[in-house]
Amino acid sequence: MMEQLDKSAIQMDGFFEKISGHEQVMFCNDPATGLKAIIAIHDTTLGPALGGTRMHPYESVEDALEDVLRLSEGMTYKCAAADLDFGGGKAVIIGDPSTDKSPALFRAFGQFVDSLNSRFYTGTDMGTTMDDFVHAMKETNYINGIPEAYGGGGDTSIPTSEGVIYALKATNKHLFGSEKLSERAYAIQGLGKVGFKVCEHLLESGASVYVTDINEKALEEIQAIGRQLKNPVKVEGTDEIYRVDADVFVPCAMGGVLNEETIAELKVKAVVGSANNQLAKEDLIEMLATRDILYAPDYIVNAGGLISVADELYGFNQERVLLKTKAIYSSILEIYEQAKRENMTTLEAADLKCKRTLAEQKNRNNFFSRTKRPKWNFDG
Ligand code: NAD
Image (cartoon, rainbow, N blue to C red; front, side, top):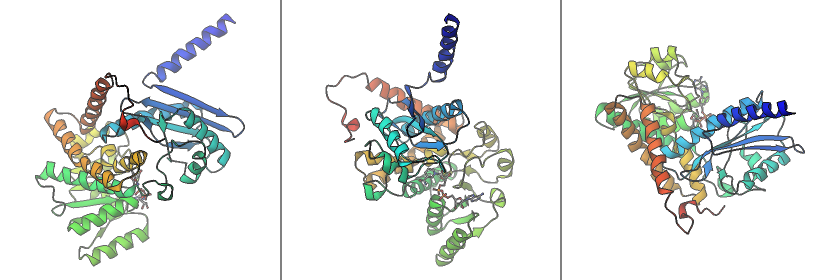
């Protein structure tokens, strides 16, 4: 018995070490519906934790835990970078999204979210859809990213694409002294919800645009717009897009596209796009720097969607969302300038900016006030 106790004590030590950077990790178990989920709250210095719920058939609880810890920490930085009054959180449901979903499972999940009493707000992520959260919403108000019909902000790709445009302008300003979009050439990878809007904006501004997509229909549509605007689009193959003679590469398709081979091919002076996790490995930022290619940190560039989702908690206002999205311009410029001044990578500069915001707010949180801070006083 004694031996058993000692063993479990050792395991617990390892577990707490793993979650030592997090405020709270909650394991949710509901045998009646088959729900097995983990909710991780990384840091609530800036406000309640905000982050989506991912559903995936993880091979082990350890894999699920690792994912939720990593993703929730990332959310702390994303929120800090976008100047949102939210902390970092994330949830994972262990299960196959195509076979293991049921309304009851999501209602059970909603109850667990509700039990955190506004410490955690969540919505869709990979493997979950708004249809799932309609069930969770019967049990909790702490759901966001909801359809317009339910009072949400709707299509996040609108502010996300606006954010990409601001980041492109800031990049032009830093590299070429003028933010004008029209004077440069761009290579856009992916003409989906975000990439298409970015491309349209660039074509309207008179810029020279190369595009690629695997979706023929999207290519035809953008070519028609180019013809209408008398600014023809240059269509490239999916492998050729890395090699075109443009000023900026704009990845708006999927993650992991910047690897040793593709970085070696790039002729551009900067990479600025909406895709999440563009670098196949984080240390590839060094390779970009060696090749003198400026990298705009993806989580700063694509914050428009998060700004929109966060805004729902105040009662959605499109104008306010676009105003906050505009700040991506100055954020990106500040990061470029600090990286240059202090001879660091743009990812390091972005990291420092977020840490500074968190440290400043930690000091503010020491100041006692009888009333709840209005910004945290959501209707919930
Ligand atoms: P989407 O699915 O609408 O568009 C992706 C596009 O990429 C599609 O047109 C698809 O055909 C194309 N594509 C797929 N494989 C390709 C390939 N090999 N080469 C070229 N094109 C390819 O997605 P989206 O909403 O436009 O988002 C684009 C990226 O931005 C994603 O990485 C997403 O995670 C990220 N992002 C989006 C938002 C948002 O608000 N939509 C917010 C933050 C980040």
